[in-house]
Image (cartoon, rainbow, N blue to C red; front, side, top):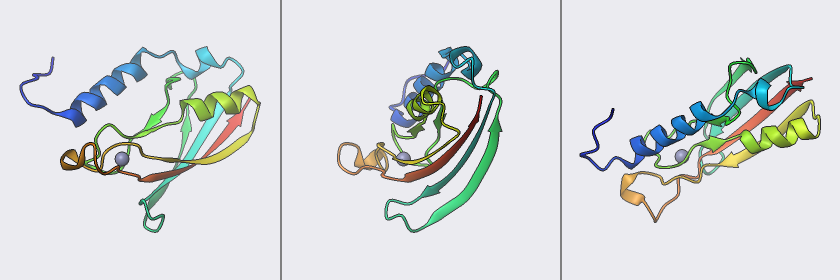
Length: 131
Ligand SMILES: [Zn+2]
């Protein structure tokens, strides 16, 4: 396993989160009615101006996990990232075909700003669901 000699809040958090993802059931186990899912998203800086390319991909519900998260593009971000699990649960619950929304990264901007400056990167997403 990883050595823990150094204080690495970023790596520790990512490791915890990936464990949480791995331990969750697959999307198709959690949402039997969900046949396909497409996720489109783009990252914006806190001021909403600069954009980091738009990404679109198909998710295979039998392989993807029900804890559904996307990494924050800020390479220094501590304890941030985006969790779309709740948005997904709501969408499936309401049998929505399309859901759009945005999330603000609640992490810290960097390890030198822990407890003072939030990352605040913005994720704008669109989920397309088929049942
Ligand atoms: Zn962040």
